[in-house]
Every structure is written in structure tokens, then in C-alpha cells.
Image (cartoon, rainbow, N blue to C red):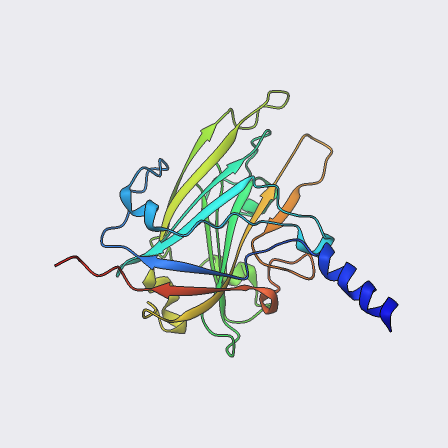
Length: 242
């Protein structure tokens, strides 16, 4: 019995730290979407910086830092990602952006309902926005739906698609209108809890496999494994001083 207990403790100790819960704070005024992250509202966002490859037991390297905030019109996102080899795939909305460097977001407003959402942005500021009625639904059928109004702007510290040089990082900032989430009720109320995962594909030199990471403790290597997503609580804006 003692050996079994020790074995369990060792397994638990080896699990990397992930983002089990986070807050999405409401702001009085959303940011200007320009990829610079210098708007005062971003200082109110809770930092999400644990991005392990959990299903392989690999801990976070600290190379991805993200935030989520909201107002009455939009959900806003930002991420800064260390990246020594900047690559991108796709030039138009809903291309297969995951064939290059990409920042991905998954939101599931209800644990009990099958619908969830996948959104992406790549270093070319190209976006992907897919509302899945259920897991396994046709990607191509959802990809032809009208644009939601989501926008994203990426800024680069380095040169895109230039093999052999050493790049620094890339940053993305964007907004998602609440109307995109209309199939599951649209805008949340303060105190509502969704489940979510922020994820990343990081491609390296030619011939190497991309590094996949996620904020969530995913037990298998699929970003669609929503049973393992962390909890995201929507918080009200701070009370104004009298």
C-alpha cells in the first residue's frame, strides 16, 4: 500500500502546471485593435502564462502570455509569443491556419450543451472563426458562414517566412463580437462561467514538428478535448469611485 501511495504521488508531482481557472474582467472601454497592447484596459486583464504540453507531461516554458477582457460589445484577446522561426499559412479568413504559427482560442459557454467555438489568428493577421454545433461537425460547412466581425492585428519582432534567420516574437490583439456567440445565448452576465482553452501551434525549422501547447490540462493531444478545459469567469467592471 505504501509503495502504491508513493507511486501515485510521483505521478501527480510529474504533471505540469496548467490554467485550471482564470478571470475575464469587464472594462469600461475596449482597446484599439492595433497589435500594440498599450491601451490602459490591458492592465486590468488577468495574465494567462501557463501553456504546457500537458498530455506529454511537458511543462510551460513561459513563452506565451495572454489576456482576455470584455465589454458590452466584444470579447477581447491578446497574446505575446516568443518565436525564433516565424511562419504563417493562409491568406484569407478560415484558411487552415494551423499549418503555420497560430494562436487559437476555444470557448464552451455550457458544459451541458454540445456547442463550442474555435477562433484563431496568425502572424499575417488572418483569422479563423468556427461555431461548432457539436464536436465532429463539418469544418467546411461552418467555414462558409458569413463573417462575424471578428478582427485581429498581429505585429512581428522578426521576419516572416524567412528560413535561417533568428526571430524574436509575435503579438496578436483582437476582438470577437458577442453576436458570434448568439447560438448559445450571446453575451455573458457577470458571474457566468464558461470553459476555455487558449492554444498555440509553434512551427520551427523545416523538417521539424510544430510544438503544440495549451493553457488547459488536456489529457490527449487534441485542442477539441473540451472535457479538460479550464474555467473562465466573467467579472463585472470595478465600481467607479464616488
